[in-house]
Length: 145
Image 1 (cartoon, one colour):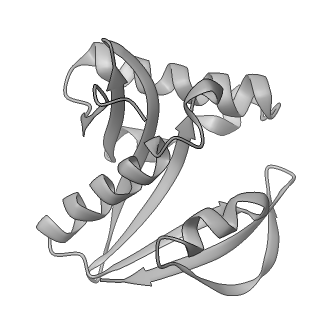
Image 2 (spheres, rainbow, N blue to C red):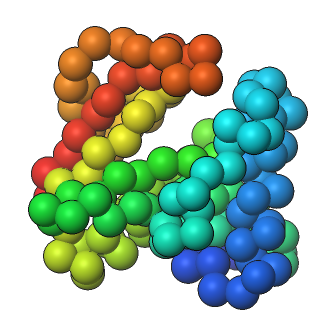
């Protein structure tokens, strides 16, 4: 992982567009998820994080306040060449910290089944059965803080 990687809130229109561009590369181009299924109404109100390296956005994730001290983490995406170097973990920890600062004590996410071990390694546990979301097997995972 690069020492130069910065994880921060997407504050500008350019940063938000960069976050969407990462999601399009990962989910739409790589995983063939329809573009209209990738973007949703929650994007307008969610807190978006970006991982920036050498001025380029290479990863993203979002946090939605569900109320009841719960937050939902989602749309975690990291460009292929930055995977397995700690970028996703840094985004996840950043989103959790942002949520705790807002009073959240539980985090929920829908993990693609093939990456559930990543989230388990960060303290998340599986809840319920595997389900399909955009034709990809997912499992709900939760973590209390």
